[in-house]
Length: 116
Image (tube, rainbow, N blue to C red; front, side):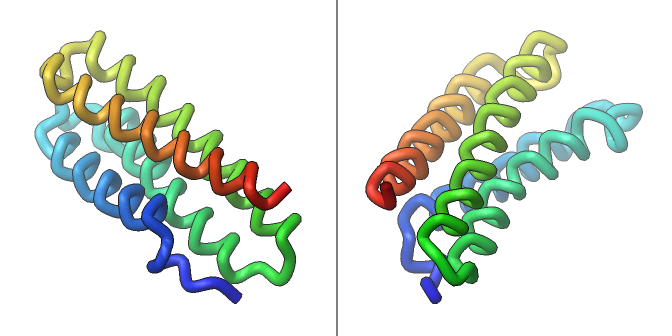
């Protein structure tokens, strides 16, 4: 069993999730159960699936959870674009968050490739 806390990709995805919660706190109230919730759930899915995969018994299973985390990164990337286009995020905040999720996706992808 692996300790997810030791992985840089997990650490960064956890911090990223905290940033998403901060960035979405001023979204319109009518989006609380819409985009706010969806973006928060998608971002928290990244470190959650990473951690769950670390508790698995095989490399193959760990890789499957990493694939889910990678897919969640793509979902977050799109949701950031949507919220930016809707003017819920300032362009500079969107750019910073987008760059971070892309970097996290690359790190997780690299780790997954090492498992093969």
